Length: 81
Image (cartoon, rainbow, N blue to C red; front, side, top):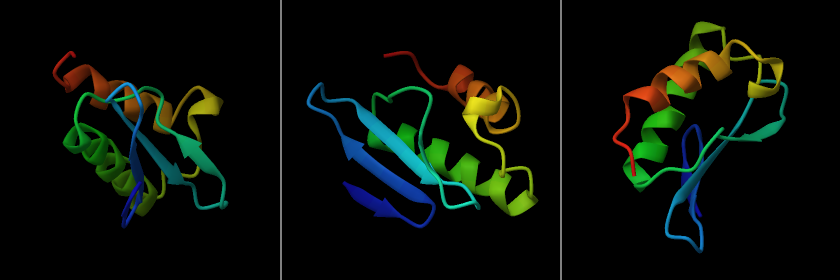
């Protein structure tokens, strides 16, 4: 598992990468999907860090808005596996 400033990226047995991050309330959350490359997972974490810094990152993907919308926007831009 690789520690980044804004979260963690780990390689799964499938060869894909999973990103996880902490919200300001201290809860750890996994990204809504796995990524083909470590760089893709890192870009997701960078986006989540930006959301936290802007003050819109206190909500989680469980809330159905906020970060989830950002995650959906980010993942729609990435290259399909």
